[in-house]
Length: 250
Image (cartoon, rainbow, N blue to C red):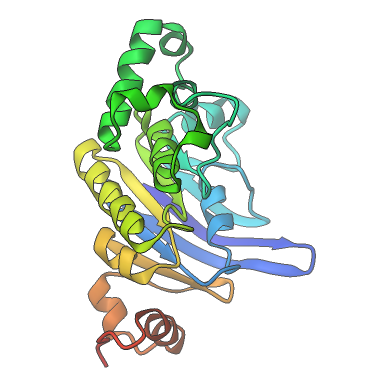
């Protein structure tokens, strides 16, 4: 389980998170919604300790990420796969080496046969053919780069997957493919996932629950039905802007 309790974070004079409460239950997928600049990625980076809060607690598997110490945090991070917004692939490495970097166990990483088998399996899981391993990032389409980034995130068989805007910059067809892939991996691997996105339609397709970060606080966290039935003006404004003329319950 992931739980943020009263998390505050500011950068200089800018308050980004102002007492945020947020939870992700075992085995579920939660979509973290919000406008650009609302602090979604900042919140996500608190979960694996890339950013520490100014105040509040970040609990993952019963451990406080802020206070567990460097060694325990490194161990915890092996259980957390992180999908960066732009894939964050190394251009000088082929796809095989990029995915292999996701192997957190040094023995597995240095085992050539294991690495080969695991990279091939991860490519299969993200619906890419084995020969993709020989390509370089510059030879891949945007959608393929996103999938390779996901393949790297799952290489170490993590318990948690954190997606930072996995469909940003993609056309609607490729965005749908990534959304379907997120759901497929959640079902097939049994992981617990947080997907940062500003795409309400995609979030509704993928997530068990949704959370809306607005003005530094959590406007609402709940099911699709609770979002559609909410009379919170920040929730209504966000949904109606994203859905445009799509039906939204009054």
